[in-house]
Length: 374
Image 1 (cartoon, rainbow, N blue to C red):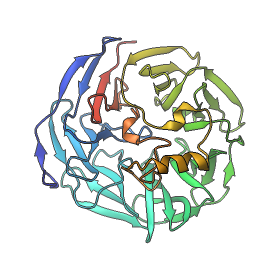
Image 2 (image 1 turned 45 degrees about the vertical axis):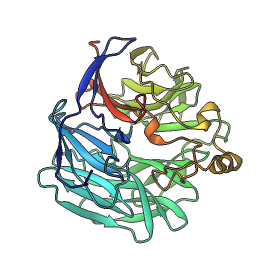
Image 3 (image 1 turned 120 degrees about the vertical axis):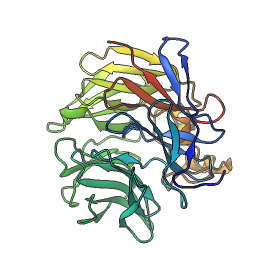
Image 4 (image 1 turned 180 degrees about the vertical axis):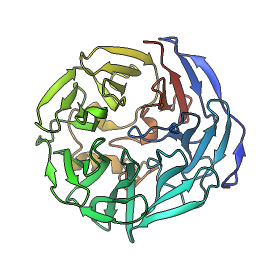
């Protein structure tokens, strides 16, 4: 297939019922290639809920596509050329632009004309996942400049950009939903949770823990401003942003987590055992089963309850696996698994639908499950 910006492909949409819950599930892609939604920290749906943003390797490298109108519309190719970072795309709240990472730069693309603008470019750097502030005014991204890890942050308009160094690999930077002066991010490995002001000041560790406490997938608990995180594979926990008080929401193997806007519910996938997608009540810990995913959930580390050590990475490299998706995953590293084998569920804007990925058919495809009435 020839890669061409603006190309329109026929819909690959089909529907079925989940075998355990009976929920209506839309299969959005069917091409024999890697196809997945955006990352679990971002919604794959446009702010108006009418379009679905996906990443596909059907032309070779990772490129952005949009399915509109949801669910049975055409698949339109948005980008071509140099591949994009496959887990970096995010809709702007204005519903008109999409931001994404390509090599060392953050770009925006207009959905109407497909005109691209380079917001900022860091020479000799590789950027990772990017995140927008709630007001759409600020951007941040994981970064690695030469051998130096860190994050970058600045205005979506292209000014006031800075590189904030950190001594370990950085992943999942995200703005506080109520105060865009603050960025929370993960340092890998332990201790995991940190915060820093957007200008690079007031860097601090939020929670000191050892390599044996496998804290993962932290994010903000909606508009509460608190942090919710997983202690893999034992529990879903909450940390008060102000007091640092920790509490357990539920003892359950929540994996990737996405709270709703109010912070009243937490969406999660599961692994070891994989029982599919669930909604967890943040106050009581009660949970509701949404559907199965049947994804392969790659990664040897998810069979353990600690972070990867040097010997784990060495063993993975010796297996000579390939298929790196970003600077965070060297081509021979399967410790945390190919990310496109993980469901990474996220809500639609109206929180009545959930998008996720599954490779149950042999290739990763994009699915949307409709939530039953409460």
